[in-house]
Length: 296
Image 1: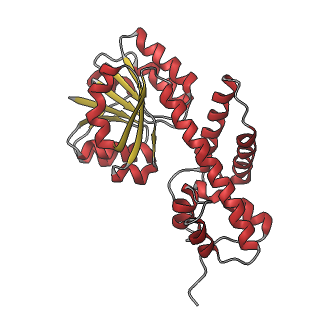
Image 2 (image 1 turned 90 degrees about the vertical axis):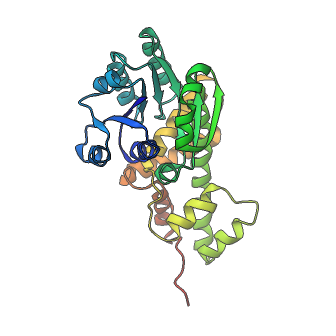
Image 3 (image 1 turned 60 degrees about the horizontal axis):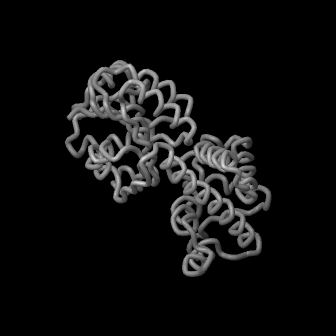
């Protein structure tokens, strides 16, 4: 079976590497020739456009930066002659996903809504969480490929858009965890507590969360700020999550404040920075850094 892959950025490339390593015959497209080169060297077919990928592959994956790009690419893919299943891995929100699914349905193409969680490092390690929604026959067809990508594959429904909502629920919690952990750690550092010891205490206590257990030790205490996702991407997902809440008349008092902090970070020029760099905004206000102290 020939499989297409559109979008070889940080996340897309890592996912496509997993598929290619498993022996999948890939047809790839990305406007960045540098991103394409390693895949072509390993035997992938470099196609000239999304339409060309859809003319060559029955299953096409897309991992793209935002809803506007996703919808534009989907318009091209819908004209393809071979594609029968379109796997949208981008986090774009359920309204955009619904428009794509409707367009594909008109052309006899089934859409699987399939965002992932775990970042590029998780993708390369094969430990992603894969969230998928769509018609069961298409899920059955694509499931072996998804199992090559992720350790946990959750099938959350038959309707495209449900997986988008699940991903955004997760990312709203993730964004809030990071914001509150960063704020509290800055407070402790300002009061003279050892940052690394604070994290050790928290991680065996009730305040622990994914930020304190993973992101802070790896990318904040070390000062590397290289966890693997941009601040702008997190802000995008928070905004999409709040839009889902507004559409359903769900009040989001806490996450409204969380969105303001992430937006302020982007306005301070950190949009392209790693999302762990958000703590620098809080550190700047307090005049302190949350970093591991050198050994005495």
